[in-house]
Image 1: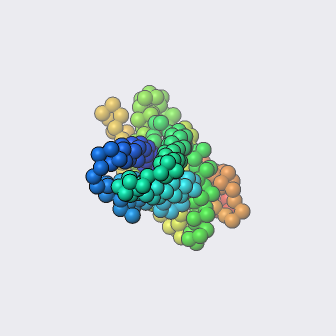
Image 2: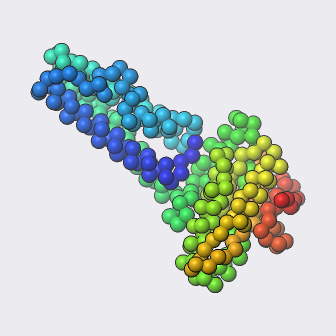
Image 3: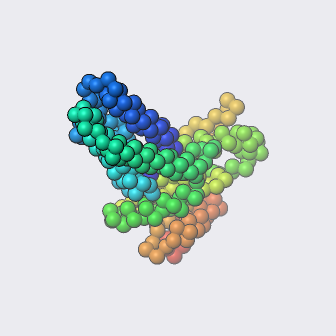
Length: 299
């Protein structure tokens, strides 16, 4: 399971709320100790760790696999322990059997849980910095980090993995004609358009300049080619406005299948050669390179 930039911002917000909510428990326990009354259902319920707001975020993040999976498992365990000791302390306050040891255990559980949230927030901020400020897409450093996970998932599900490089056609002429601000607008628009054409098993990255890399999971070469054409055609028919004028923007794509002995670097190299072959033979088309670097036009 990969995280997009909107998910990152949502996660950071939920972590901040979780920190506040669980710190607020100290106030609830103090109120009960001083004033008496019934215990809060948010703490007293034996399954309260499944019902607090933070549990919904945890459930989402525990699904599937990601680079941060072990960190999430740790947070989940600390969250459960935090709820358990808070419930035990609240029961002891009600029964007037509070011990210094139990209070210390509560404070320790709270510290461990909050520290795990803070450490994860630091990780998310670093992860967010691996996204392009202009387009919001993950950058090549994240591509190399996520590639082994995606490859492992493909092998487990008996899918093939393909590398697709898409490069904006005649981008230099866009900059020369309209200026670099317009070029940035085009990059943003192309990134959003290509991303809107991708599906769940397709992960898009900004590779550099006007190049984008997509990792495709597909059952066959034909399915991968169909996916590449879907993206190319989606952009070709998409209207891009610059200074209230419509300009036609297209991409040329190079596609290759990742072989058993291929590294990501070698696969990108083959896809890159296919893309340049497409540039030299007409642009606005997709070319597939085989393991022997035979060039196959499709679409």
